[in-house]
Length: 279
Image (tube, rainbow, N blue to C red; front, side, top):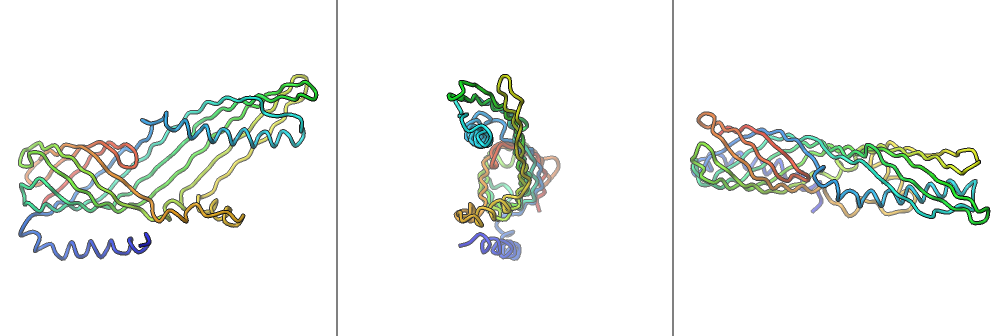
């Protein structure tokens, strides 16, 4: 089933959920909650290093081609790189939960709408390329400076399962896991901005400079790929998946009003605070 059809089923599911409320209330109760999170991937910065190495290799290849337009005998002998990457953002959501076991039940089922802002930034990247010209017995260096970022703002629909420990207590720890998806359009609308420049130096000769920049959505870049006869990068991605796994603490403020604090995974790492009201 396509993601677009799944998205159309969500309002139907919610409507049935709400219309069934009086019957469900006889066995359990509802809870509505609001939350806000800080989102980050910085804890796994080292894993991003491999991805940057692949990108740096592309920089080296493109720079070598540009240099060879005027200096055909130069070739890349070696190169090294360094980068500063960070990924952060925010998330907010509205959630409705159902407790089948009643007011004192430990298990609950939740439906939520999540709006997430994801910023993937390469604040700086340096690539030093060492080139050689055996014909004229010359050596040269090219220093590449690059920066860029990708911003996404997907809206996801989530289904979650929560288990509370000591649910009748004023303080109740819990574990929650869930999954959901956003439409593939949220990926196509992601905004990419990127630029790089290089300076090519050979002792005794004038420096050469060059570079490039781009500012487009992923959808626009994909359209260009298709126009060039390449396969769309979205053909095999029916939707944007989300996975949620957290541990948290629920604290009762007054009767039927609770404060929640949790941390864990939400397509990244989150620290979240929220407020829930039972009825």
